[in-house]
Length: 141
Figure 1 (spheres, rainbow, N blue to C red):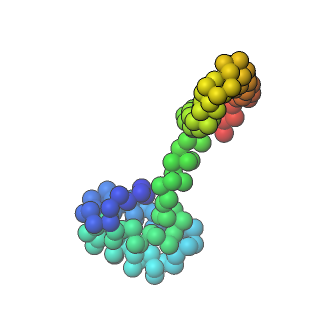
Figure 2 (figure 1 turned 45 degrees about the vertical axis):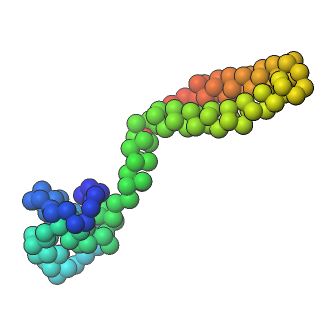
Figure 3 (figure 1 turned 90 degrees about the vertical axis):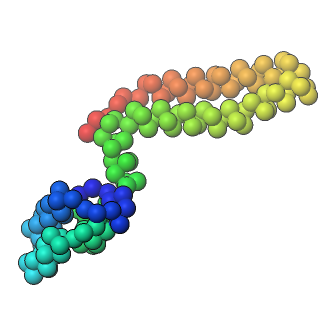
């Protein structure tokens, strides 16, 4: 079962079959009775929209899809390489947003030497963090 983009979109035979498979799996797991399964199967085969199908599995774990969790699971399964890159880019932009005005302010208000020292400390901190980031072994499941 996949994330339903819009409940009002008409469903296909493949959508109905995926829903039926989900319902059968959940009945096998004991989450719904055979009577409930029969009633839901009738509704699944008669469904016209994706919303009709979604309503049949919304109270079941396999049918209750959270797109954010699906995305996080996908990132985790890829070894989180892309997530790390995005995280470090975001942190870098945030640090530069704070640090650059300080360095510029020191250069203008106090002296160029203080600005150079602050800039050096900033670069050393960035390299220390990057060194720690690169030295971590990757974990794969």
